[in-house]
Amino acid sequence: MQQTVLISGGTGLVGTALKSALLANGHNVRVLSRQKTDTKKGIYQWDLSTGYIDKTAIIGISCIVHLAGAHVMDKPWSKNRRREILTSRVSGLELLKEAIKENPEKIHLISASGSNFYPSVNGAFFTEVDKPGESFISKVCIEWEKAANAFKSNEHHVSILRTGVVLSNKGGAYVRLRKIFSSGFGSSLGSGKQAFVWIHIQDLVSMYVGLIEGNIPPHTYNAVSPNKVSMDEFSKALAQRLGKWLLPINVPSFVLKLIIGKRANLLLHGGYLDSQKIQDVGFKFQFPDLPKALKNLV
Ligand SMILES: NC(=O)c1ccc[n+]([C@@H]2O[C@H](COP(=O)([O-])OP(=O)(O)OC[C@H]3O[C@@H](n4cnc5c(N)ncnc54)[C@H](OP(=O)(O)O)[C@@H]3O)[C@@H](O)[C@H]2O)c1
Image (cartoon, rainbow, N blue to C red; front, top):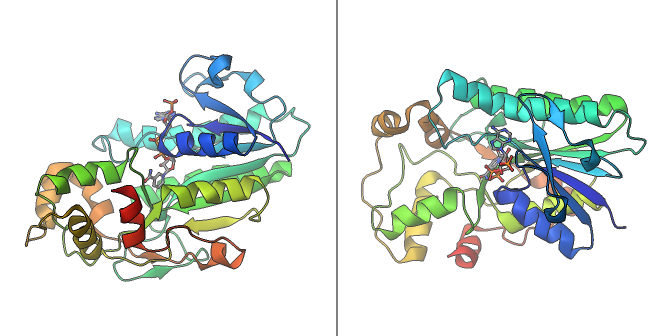
């Protein structure tokens, strides 16, 4: 059935790919953005600082995908930046919840969340029932998910995808890493034993489409590949795929901390995530293992 889907942050890496997939499946797509409304391009403006939202974006929608949020790694975590990382995700949901109050349709809200919801423990293995961590980013994920789950009180359906590093050749972490590794300066980080939790963008987009089209029941899922790889294994596989040397010494933790401050913790520590729950409801990964994913991306 054709649906009208509103994607907040639909101009970003995941949103752009999702928009194309939804249009290809015959759905109508609207994008909620900080840019000015331009209905010809399907762009509808909102402004989280003033609480403004172009309400025409809401008319007739059956699904909201919430992807908007200030980038976590792009800038140092000053007090202001930390506030922005949190409020850009939570205030967006609060604004949307208010805006759909008079909407007669039941809405399925699907919100992104991060794999850093879980504690940063090397060697651990987390399923969706495990408790969250206590880091700054874990706390952001907790508030983000709480704001998403608040939609349930209006009898709407809610789904959450706790997402690992999205591998895409259109941008994000993979493009940055490919540049470094291609120049021959690729190396692993810290102990190298921490998990590198990843998902190919096509699989992530298929999860969103599956939820929107009702092939995956609304719920909270880990959106990560079933292939468990450590930072050392990921670095080795990427260097091999690019035909480059991997530097024989990992970048020491203290050096990374000197360069990017507390953000380094996201790269230096972390456990694996279990993706069995989404597979149990019938989801099939197109890129279940890293070599296949890298072959497709390089
Ligand atoms: N990519 C990953 O590896 C990854 C991994 C785990 C979780 N996630 C989460 O999944 C979501 C989508 O990821 P993505 O990679 O597509 O993100 P992205 O490329 O950074 O795009 C996010 C969008 O959010 C909007 N945005 C940015 N800063 C904002 C702010 N301060 N206030 C309001 N809106 C803002 C922007 O849209 P406008 O400029 O049009 O407003 C931007 O296009 C994000 O919430 C991200 O944290 C991503």
